[in-house]
Image 1 (spheres, rainbow, N blue to C red):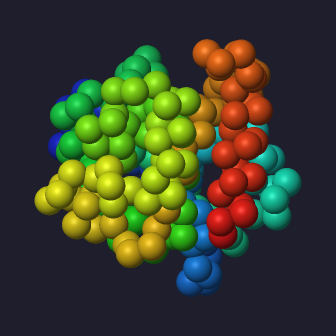
Image 2 (cartoon, protein in one colour):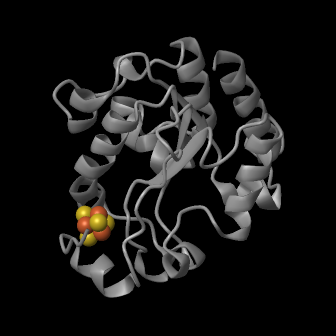
Length: 201
Ligand code: SF4
């Protein structure tokens, strides 16, 4: 597939990084969604292949979730932003129909949004609260994004019935084990979220 909607990203990318889903029509139990491809992903044409991304795979493998068998990976935008900056609102909006289509066709049991940018996309009017507050809000709402997605948005229209939403910290603070605002390590926050998610699967 080729796409030239985002001028700056077309100039900075080596290739479009398409989502990868479980093979041989296996059900997609979890769809991991990050912000954007980084340098390694841009080079290899596959999401979550850098060092930080591997931390996430290790965490999921501890719960016997295997990439390509149980879960797939995607990004909010499919092209690497220059200097690894965050994608702009316009770039996110340009790529969102593709992401909505991926979620609609793969029908994951759970969407696992990795990091604040990915989480914001799914949090509607609650997009500007902190990551820990987003996690708490989802817990209080049974991880059901129906209460979050704006009516009529492309995500709302394509969201499969029953798919739940979990949020975990970005892979960098997970991998480098930085502190969250509540004093815990981000890695502890991430591990707790994955445990809750696995319990629901
Ligand atoms: S980020 Fe998405 S919409 Fe923008 S050029 Fe890449 S594939 Fe197209």
